[in-house]
Length: 230
Image 1 (cartoon, helix red, strand yellow):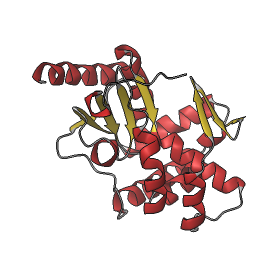
Image 2 (cartoon, rainbow, N blue to C red):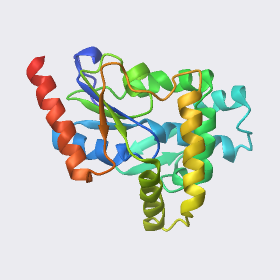
Image 3 (cartoon, rainbow, N blue to C red):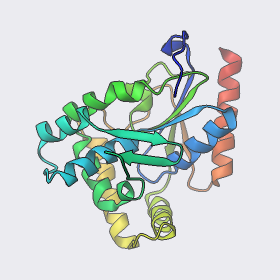
């Protein structure tokens, strides 16, 4: 159980890592958090859980009021590497491409984003938080002392995602993933509410030719400099 701290949320440091799908931000965020001894927020998991719950209820991706109600009452629990939806392990199911595409579509709805906003901000607890997503630095934690926008070539991202899915025992086709990824990028960058874009004060980091370890180290170096300036 998380203890209630007297420290105000705004005093708790946050590193935001935003970027397009399969840019490696999730893996990088977990490793940065581990290195610092901080908590991690996978905001994409909340949108995927909303999508999975909506799919389970037979809702269409166009049903904004229905999906927003699902988001408002989402019964989820994070327990280390395990993710539970309505008491059932959902970590595998939320990684299905069908769920990811549904999540990308409903993430454009203002009602869905508002329903999940405070839930995301509640993760800001001492000693610190690494938050990954698409609007962590622009909307959810605009006062974060370090913001990173992680980019990578779309082909490199599709290859990464294909490898990840196959390693998890999920069938994947590279051409299909590449097409879906380009469509998702266009949706995420073109939506009216919280479009995918770097914050004005974000460090844009291209990880196309970097290993995960090199990307993590670059962010830790950013944090060391940011901490020295505080």
